View (cartoon, helix red, strand yellow):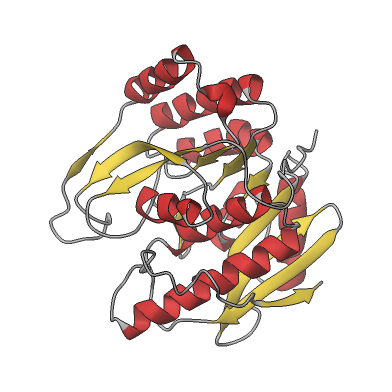
Length: 289
């Protein structure tokens, strides 16, 4: 059964968003991108780290640790015992890191859905990119079997969409078809990131019950870490504020493009999310499909 997008109408959501993702000390990836992206819309974000690292995983000399499935489950049990899960306006699920962590996050999503049925669940299936998985396939199976069906919003990148659906994603019609197939598994809307409609352009494809549209802007000629985390958080924030899927995509991509331009100007490899200049960024170009 397809989930409904649980927007909260014009204005701001009435509860917090629980964010389950990676945490780094230096750099704006994972929770370091998600939490400020939500806070900028006045959304209280509760971070639950699945890994804690000194920096992005590709950083030289990176150190840290992964939370075990038991640790994530214990934190979830503590939140339930405290009686705070019914307050949730949303649950954002990102990098999980291991099969045990993924199963614990899926259990948490089940409890959150039962205790806060009006909450919007977003699943960002962080699995791989550039044609390869960087997590075990078993983690992907948990996303596929439990977390995608539970979600109202799903935000795979192009590679993850192809892996999750087993479909080709080598041109726009096939990408739309694959996104529709993923949406049929449960989400009300699927947003496919890293879609390039033409040379020098990149954006996010939105597919929902009413159709499909591509929000796109100029491509930054360098890899920006955390861009997917930021984009997912902005899509959730816009949805909670009452935006339709194409509106959410256009606004989120516009904000990400503004930050990517700042990152390039500052010669950095992550988004300067502390900057306020992206808050009034124009919406990206929107092309109905």
